[in-house]
Length: 207
Image (cartoon, rainbow, N blue to C red; front, side, top):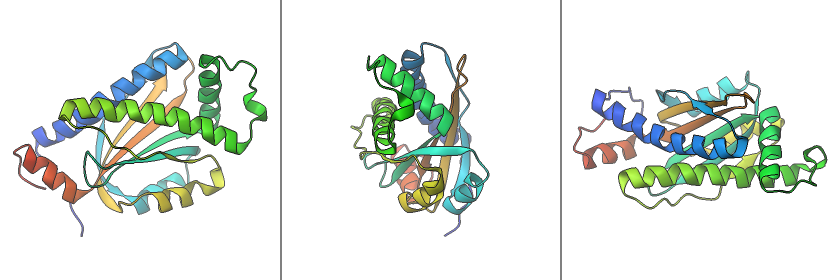
């Protein structure tokens, strides 16, 4: 069933604040990893279409992605975390240095090893995000272990098979390192039926 975004100002503000609070905590974690200021964009609220997302990604350089879902925010709350392969390599190298694994050379790591480290990094970031949102809305996060894609040729198939929502409302936030210029993109996807329940709980009219 097709929907149009028909959110009141207060409803939109609540959703954007939820995303902003979570990603602000993620930025703090990244600042500790990189030792620099991480700038985040204002949350962008959109109608979500998996088909359109896949179409858009065809022309993008993004090649590394982590997929998450959480059963406590809603029936199906999903999130995607994107990095270019180049920026993912920088992120992994900084993470290795932070972990004092100084004898590890990122250039000789296998795809499986890179995916494992990226999975660990993504888990750290997303657990920070959902924990912050959980405090805001008084719930205990219950996110599933992330699925990751580290092979450019498999990205579109990975997104298509991973995402359960075909349509909904998405909240998009990008972030960039002040000095390293490493860029990331966080996409939170909420289904319409769950949003109805969510807004009713808060005393708003359903979508």
